[in-house]
Image (cartoon, rainbow, N blue to C red; front, side, top):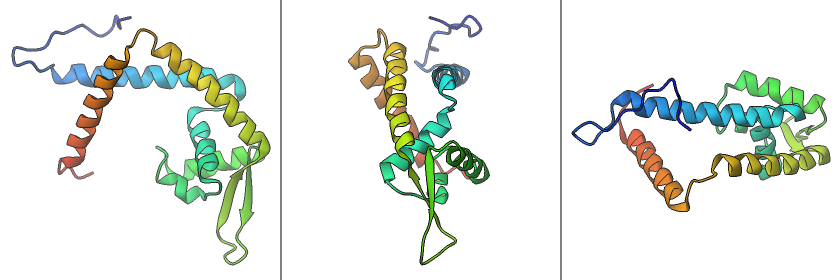
Length: 160
């Protein structure tokens, strides 16, 4: 399905797309994935970043909120608020270290474990529907091209 707002453009004579085509396509895909995941998780009172937080806890076994800030695309103060909410809802437990009471370790509760398993299945269903009609070859090309672009970006000397 094409986006009626986005004019379809052919590659220029040089074989390159106009710069705005890539930007629009990436933004449209990110928006579709975000809206789809948000919609799928909403009945379970979760947002996508909270699910990522729960998955991080599951994968690490035990972690700190500070460790999450390095891998989740949000600021530390928001992570603190999200962790607090997940603790209040009984999905995450907190434990202070005996030798350094300033450090708070986070773990999934059994309820959190069960919810993550259910949400993983739900999210997989969303991605299966999203990938309908996309061949393995198409996906391989997409992943390869996007990885090359990320590698190119990493190689640039752009300062933030």
